[in-house]
Length: 124
View 1 (tube, one colour):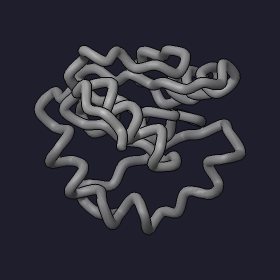
View 2 (tube, one colour):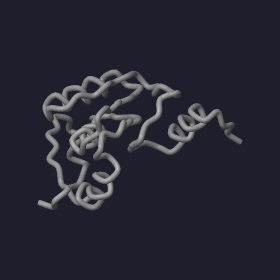
View 3 (cartoon, one colour):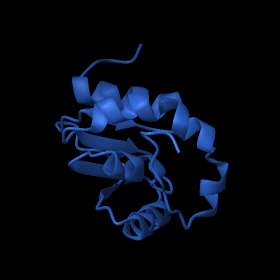
View 4 (cartoon, one colour):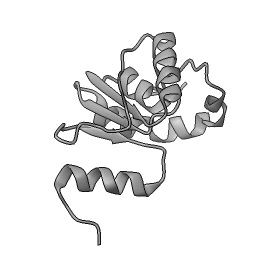
């Protein structure tokens, strides 16, 4: 296994879609960004896989946000299986919060809107 590889235990069927190659390809870069106690946000967390990976890579605080309450339950369950803690919230991330790392596996538009709320920028 590559030096920066991590193991994730997932109960959610969606986990099957994540390939080992994807984790390996970006593991070293993610490790450099997360180690040292970063604050991380998984926006649109679904199963929580990205939040769990951030926690396992050393993030000191990880927030998992999703509009689907069931997704938040699944993410928390997967976090427990993996021995990590996640702060979870329905849909809206605290706009004033500063995160060192934001991860998402969702469409671009919700991320653009999040950034606009965070910075006060206007969409044109």
